[in-house]
Amino acid sequence: MPLSGGRFSVRSEVHQETFHPQVGAQEEARCVYFRPMHLRQRLLNATESLCVWDVGLGGAGNALNLIRDHQDLNARVELHSFERCLKPLEFALHHAAKLDYLHGFESFLDQLIKAQRVTFKSGQLELDWHLHMCDLRDGYGPLSGKLRSADAIMYDPYSPAKNPELWSLPAFNRLREALTTPATLATYSRSTSVRVGLLLAGFYVGRGGEVGEKEETTVAATDPGLVGPLLEEQWLKKIRNSTNGEPIRQVPHTRSFLTAETWDRLLRHPQFSSLAVDLELPVRH
Ligand SMILES: C[S@@+](CC[C@H](N)C(=O)[O-])C[C@H]1O[C@@H](n2cnc3c(N)ncnc32)[C@H](O)[C@@H]1O
Image (cartoon, rainbow, N blue to C red; front, side, top):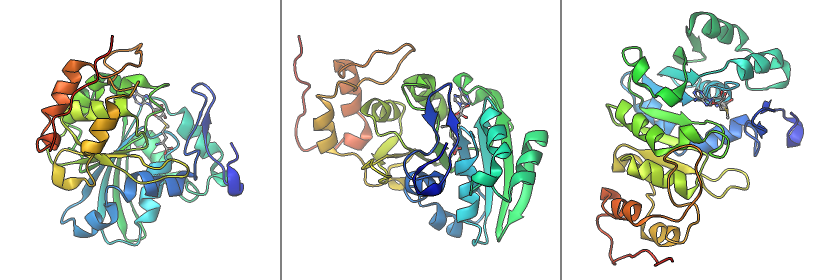
């Protein structure tokens, strides 16, 4: 699929969604994942390898741009990619010449597909890359044993409208339960429903970077010190009137205003424990 500026990207006709539609794979990965999670600095500071989870390997845009953007660093990355269908990657490999990010990595991807693991050095950066062919609707539990807890998560399923199971409160609960050490998560969605879901699952949630025409994305973490700026009172005030306030609890899901129960849970989240004023939900009949 051609993008502006002569670049190309992968598109799923089944989901009617183009991967990295705004600014292309490389810039999107920087704006949505690398900068908000301070990956360069964390790689520089890491005493052992940094463990990154790549949720939705797809055409490997985020994974390969992570490698390309940090190959000048004398550091190590343990990369875990999760995927249930290899068609986007096979398609991308077939069109490698048109996808700037992929060119030169074809043999490593072939090996990853064949053996589910590949280790190599790209520039200065050492990679230990694992592929988990799985359906994440079943959570991460079935992979335990093969999986190191993430330091950073690039969360990139299809949109909440097309891929609701992975944006639901049960999905975020399963993800939070799988994390046994401090971790950050970044994603392109900034929807209220997604942010509320992350908060109810126990994450601290903040504003991520700007990408293309989108003013902000979302970054979250298991610990408040790992993410900033955190969503604050102003955001809470605003979402009282959101028609998409409730997290997805089951599929199919219908958008709705926040319920009193969800609101109560939000106000009890430690992120909002020092609110200056009493905030109430508007009464709706
Ligand atoms: C937007 S694409 C990911 C793009 C990719 N990160 C890239 O940079 O090229 C979303 C991917 O999530 C995968 N996915 C969706 N639902 C899934 C599930 N339940 N379990 C595992 N993978 C899933 C899809 O197969 C698809 O490849």
